[in-house]
Image (cartoon, rainbow over all chains, first blue to last red; front, top):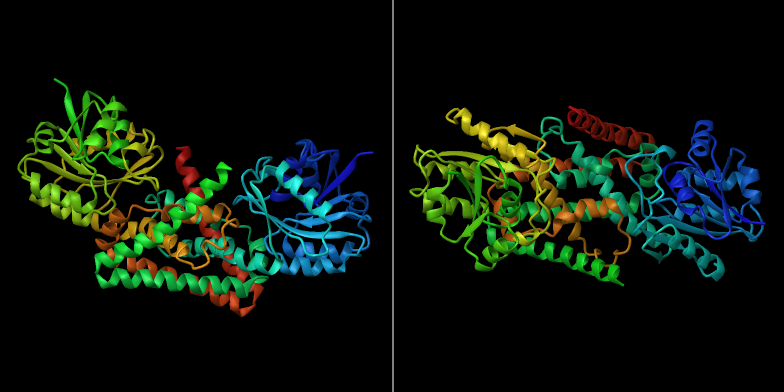
Length: 287
Length: 287
């Protein structure tokens, strides 16, 4: 009998995960959602092998469960269904904060194994209708196993990450993940919305280049999701923003000084860091 | 006899302009540069119909001159070659600030017509070897004609902009251009380098998603170019950054308050602005 992967929450990421995991080893994919239109769309578009709104039954039968809900939804789901998971199952999630989720997973019995995950992919859209089979291609897949994680479960997660096209699997602790993500992801979203808060936004339309588009793309964000992500990681995000303000201020001082040579040196220093990063990325992708 | 367009400065933008303008009406394209390797590359790769290092002769024969140098280079070129341009020629430029350039163009004789230009395209690379024929596709082309500009010269510039694939031609004053560009372009570059100035940049590699890549792509910038652009527009850029700091600070306060409802409302407000902008763009592109 084939094994089963349950994808709980067929939104942008859950839908993409269901599409991307199709054909993985001997697993069949079950999509779980509370919304009938979502389930209907998923069926009509072959997002999963089958779909259901019976979460308790789905997780009871699943060998692997991906929780693809908003952070608070995951916390609530774990609480509600803690007794329903199949013995020996791997339970994981895909959300952008890990400390609160891993903490919430402590309600699970010791016969179920939870490993937090965060495939670093997404778009500014939401919903199953925007799901993409190739969403995860080239993305980092972060996981947070601990000393109790069994090697075969970690290996299974790694095989799935490779199957869906991720460039690598990065292991870290939930706390470290959240501190880092405050900088590499959450701060980018605060920057994007802060740029769009400028009173002159609409007056200045027609003058955007790719730098503006690249910086502000993510401003059209999923409000409930990002409210939770920000709120559940507020101190780390605030700290990253404090550093950013200092860095911007240093540029403002260089600008106001009128010292072109100093400004050039400063730009040389910053841009050399980015070029070094680009080279390291290129080097890694060659391997 | 065919007419001539001289492209002065075969860098990323000049090279792309030469490639993109090939075949435009009855014009032949002459590439002008001081660097022999650049001229050799341009010849071998058919970047222009012909190339020369004799700028005085090239502009004396050209019906249209595109100045594709760095801002200070344009100012210097205008001063040095003010007596060399052909009577009745259209002289324009492609650089990211306009007040200083238009001011410098006042040295030209009244028999030559200068109209400032700024096609809003580019990449984080530089040099003719990175030039792209389709660099300008879908980009805004900003021009700064004034009450003395002749309609046929403006129309010629508009036809060239359409020919190279720009989505539209936006007319404004040099001063207004510089105030706007401080926000829509220069500020994006200060943000990108400021993000890369974070001491944890290299420690946090492996955790970047597309939001990070989109925001920081332009940090690997051309230092002499951007030093000039920033320095020649410092007050407007500083003002844009001041507003950004206020907007980021308002988010920091919302984060620290711990009030999720207030944070959600704030995110709703900002993201609705971006979605409104996206809709306006989509609407415009439909036409």
